[in-house]
Every structure is written in C-alpha cells, then in structure tokens.
Image (cartoon, rainbow, N blue to C red; front, top):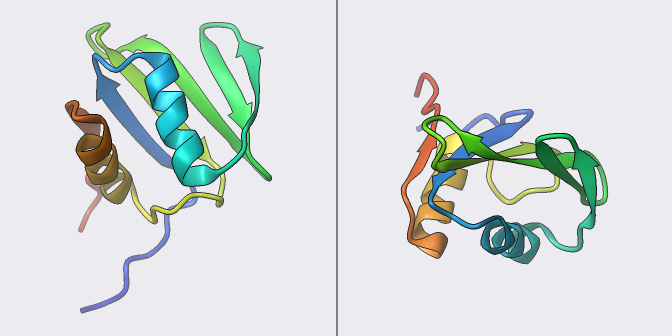
Length: 100
C-alpha cells in the first residue's frame, strides 16, 4: 500500500454545525489560532502559518465550509479531515474524496 500524499490544502463542509463549535474543534486539533479576522461572508483564523477560513451558509445553506490553507493540521487529505470531523462533531460532513 502506497503512503497517502499530503494535500496542499484541505476543504470540508459541516452540516448544521455552529461556527463556534467548529472553531473549538479546529483549535483542539491545530492549536492556538489568531483571529477571527473578518473576511466578508467568511471568518478567517491564522495558526502559525497559513489560514483557516470558515464560510457559513454554503451548499444548501445548512453547511459550514472549513478550508485549511495551512500545513499545520493533523490530516493529510480531505477524507481524513472529514472522517475526524464527523466522529468528533457528530454531524454530516461532505468533502471531495479525491481519486483514491
């Protein structure tokens, strides 16, 4: 079995998950965050490097988009992050499963 290639960024969508709960989960997994910084319709936080952006009301309006544009995260892929989010938050999580 080949090792999983680490994606440059990770993007997941959490259904019916409040922003503050999602931020707390991210903080527990990534560490301290600087922010929030207003990004218009989105809310941005910064860990040591990169950015984590939360966008409420995506997809059918019930989803919160979470985009990890940082290498400081414990998950290599969207699917790993989605599985972890679903288990920890108990909500439906969507992502692009990729080609594997």
